[in-house]
Image 1 (cartoon, rainbow, N blue to C red):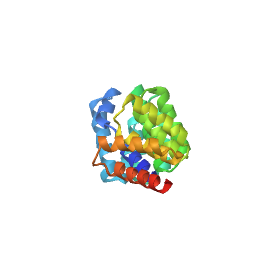
Image 2 (image 1 turned 30 degrees about the horizontal axis):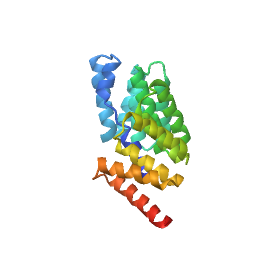
Image 3 (image 1 turned 60 degrees about the vertical axis):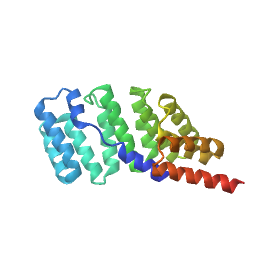
Image 4 (image 1 turned 90 degrees about the horizontal axis):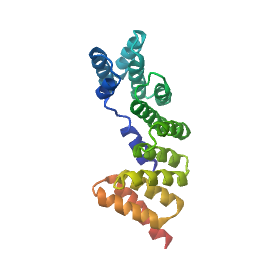
Length: 220
């Protein structure tokens, strides 16, 4: 289950940078500089980090700090990146409520990549205080609970997410895995069957189905 959890965490770290900059009403020069810095984190993270530091010194504020954090993430400094993302999300200049929720969700996923589920749960809970009904954040927090082996809470959060988005294959896969860890094979089988119906070509769903089938076979 941990591979699926961490792959999902990596995918959750991408945000629409230009749109976010517009939400904060920065001028066009700042928007373009922000986009360029974010783009560079993928191609040359070291240079993006230096650019972000320089921009921060020139008064770049939250946008510069966000680029620095993502550059650190690309450089493999996941704990530092996670802490910085969480700090930005809680800062007075963190932007709109939606933006701060996204930053805290990024922080939580970075903490998961750093294999720090307790810190991840804290960041996701902070995000849910801002956006109580966001199913993605409930799924994220469930992954943190699962890494802490708190499968009851993982099931609870995934059930909440699925009440809002019933056809979410990832949530169903994760809940099937959590049910499997709790020894509830019937519920695990039901969830993974539905996950495969929704996403029949999803390798992760098929792997979960294989684990559930093996557990059922060995229990007989």
